[in-house]
Image (tube, rainbow, N blue to C red; front, side, top):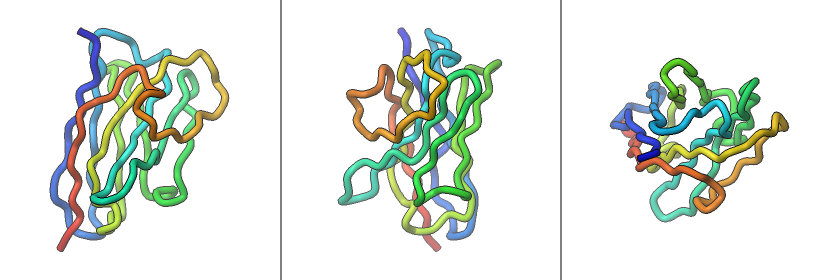
Length: 129
């Protein structure tokens, strides 16, 4: 069964860092846009970062630019969300997703589940002192 499996959420203090992981099984991420989407309590989903296949060009939301980084590990067929300088506003459920693509153009930030071929289970991130 092809799927994405996310992990790595937890409780972290403001200013801290956390890394989320998302591993694909049954398909190769090389041919997919990969993305992270989050949903804070009482708010709609927000696409925060995506990365193109091939060169891995990233698009970041202003809310996370310079603090969050999407990293790919081709050998592990895994991608990560490295989150630094966390604030309480980053508290949310974080979802990883992948969309089949052959394009090297910058990917759009898209929070719509139906836009993706695969959608991982959520990882709760809570930023609190």
